[in-house]
Length: 352
Image (tube, rainbow, N blue to C red):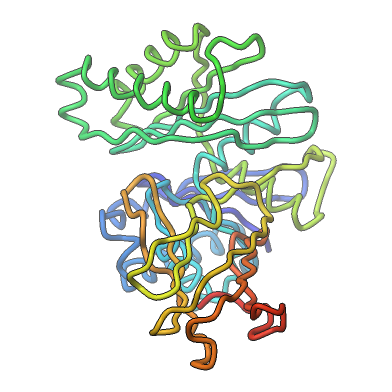
């Protein structure tokens, strides 16, 4: 049985198809598992995934097989891989791990008329707010850009003006970087927030309305609902209740590569690059003949988190090589290595 599971909030929620419609429910017993180190702790993550799996299977009366997960924006590449591993140990295959904001975008996408519009989606959680801008053109959804405003809840409530200044600054930078302008005719603002941060949610809504010049619409955030729609579409499992759509996923983090650990990083993919994507980078092999791959997460400022390596045969030291890197639709990384004459050194393989 397929399901989508949302790990973005303190209380885990999930969605599944009961034969006539998509059903979304919450697991109140998961409150307390969420800690700042949850996604960095194999034991804690494994325990949470096991509890969630058992609860969902008991409720829906079936065994979970393929799932799609939504996680907080601050989760790094390695933390998402840790979640996949924990699910695999429990007998579940994770088809994809996406940001909770993307799940919310898919959710809203299903409810919208198939017309061209720009959507500014703001999701506020316990210590950060993520602003995602995407465009809908008929039955196509594509991310334009995203940014994050981090805050300490009590301080944000006490100094509202400072919080609003940070929101304005991030929003203006987002629009500038993506060559957008405020107040487009077809622009719509949606705002949602977790429990206990409603006052901060109001600050975000007021500031967005002030900058963009449009009224914000609040909505019930259910990332797992949207993620489930997306899972069903990618699996070609559709019903009359699931509208056909084509959603362009994007790379959550920037991906870079370097020959040796001390050379300058070469950017391969920028954040929010549409998936699937492919790029080729030319490198000169250094003395230690190791390729190092890195992912940069904007939210937790981990711009150079190592995510994998590849050792090149010593015979190629000091020579130029070509590295073809692919980000597939599941957001996993594969690469192939060729020498200067385009002869294969390593065929296409998954990053490890």
